[in-house]
Image (cartoon, rainbow, N blue to C red; front, side, top):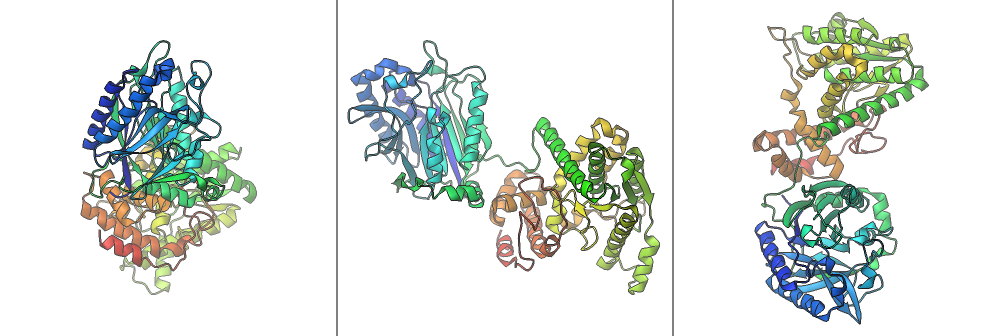
Length: 632
């Protein structure tokens, strides 16, 4: 898959003051990184000498050995590998704590530490000078740019903890990656603080952040080091060592450069920061160095099948509770303006169930009687006993105002009026039912003094899987920011809430019911004959396509490559190709429905509201995307 850089965080065994042994460790791990196809290898702070040398840094023998050791590492550094190691460097009578960049058997540059900790257990100003004003050919703060256009910058340990980290400047000077060589000793609760610091900085700088800290072998006298290393990308930690106190190891991760650049293109504040005088940071062109993985390389990148759904159960429940609360608060606000009454069409399916639960939560939250919610089940030709019974059971359990209006006769009359044969089950037959339902809901809402609550979800909106001016239309689309794959989990979470305990049995059965618009007659056994995913494709695939298309602007080829990894063993290549082609065809042809969709609460970073997040011409042509799909 294109656009990835494989980084290696290396925590070597440190021999404090024994440069020769440390150099051998560096070479051993560089060869190991080469075997694991890492192109950028990062070591801890002062890794060549050991961080804990203290007053040994005053010894000329140690400093000379370190400089000679760097030359040996450069000579032995494998082709195709760029190493960033820590070493003390003398310059114009001063000593600096530096990160040294090595590639293609030569030293490309060095970056001195800017902020020197000098409190409690730290005495760095006793030995080193700050590099904040150093800017020469030999040593200085730089942006390193590889031949394939990937750029990285370096900061060292305390630099990240300072009020004005160098990484802020480096990121706005164009660095895709920030590398941090660290020797952060371990204290109670420091690991959690450190992890959050790295994660937040990767989010603020919209970058990949590689943090590598000295391991347990660095421990001496009063201090213990833990070897805490991690890789974060744009606010998400993608890799982290697991041991609390760790020895020597190598940890590889793939960083998605295309994702980083997509986020930066969408961020107006990041683009604005590019003009604040940071572009004078010196650049070093690594003309022979390539960092991007070959397209055919098997990636270490972890790609989740359901990007909208947290994989951790606790986090998933918390996320669902938050979304549910957001939906209820937004609807409550709308009801406070419109009079406090709402009408919902209840089909016994997932989307209408979630909308009804949200309406109940909103009523409870704003001290409105649940009788202000009118649920209407509108059976017609395709309604099965299962969905009909679940609709009634749910409405009764939630103690709302419940009605049933059978629309069969009205639809038959309408089909007769327009001259459509009832035995012809084409789109006119289906949509006549959908539009009749919406007309009934609108008219009852007028009579009831309320608004019609829309039930359609984000996935249906993306695919245009809604009948224009039917389920497409309402006074408020409470589910419009929730993808289909997440609807299930929110209902599951709500089913466990005390206020819905009487409805739990019905909710569980609704979750087990196949997704269907129920517009075609049931089969001979009375079961649902029309299943949505047989027609438009699996929603887990469409939600995957939608997320990466809207969130990052990725094209069909990139999304297809990612999908193959995420759904390996679930769908074969031909199945994925079939549905990604269908996704792009439907997404483009159905924009006219999104252009006039009703208000709806925005939930996450992917939204298709024409008033904010997605402003697309209704007549845009899909030729470019469909051509790429055909070439998969």
